[in-house]
Image (tube, rainbow, N blue to C red):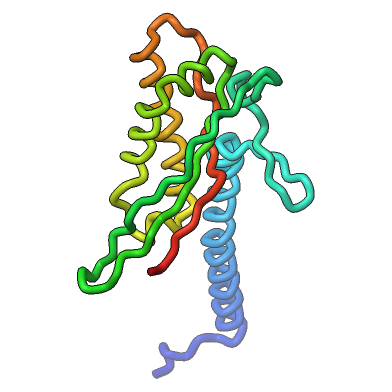
Length: 182
């Protein structure tokens, strides 16, 4: 049993080194992931999220001239439209989705093409907004995706209807967007 006893000085030395070892290991396990997170944010996320905060509004900085709406842009308003919202239960009445869209065109020539062939554009807009669930329609990301899809398909339709036309739809926006329970 004499071999089991550790001298008092050596026992304190072992306790002190084990405490330091725990502190160093704990510090490294916290500092290394935090440093990695900061580096990922600075070099990957921050460049993707280049925005300026002004007051309470977040304003995106224009990345190219396509983000700026020129002063000669022309707005084309479409009539109010409605679509039935898909519900999970078939026995409940379906809510009604009422919306109105406007398109900002790069010039008057594009606006006159859209006005002249408004039925094509109305049918395209209605097709995009049909068969959506309430959850989808309440999601702001889906609302933005619908606007983006409408813009892309409107520009494709412009190229089909008038291949030589240089202008395009710059932006699509909602003038009215509501879901009404019946």
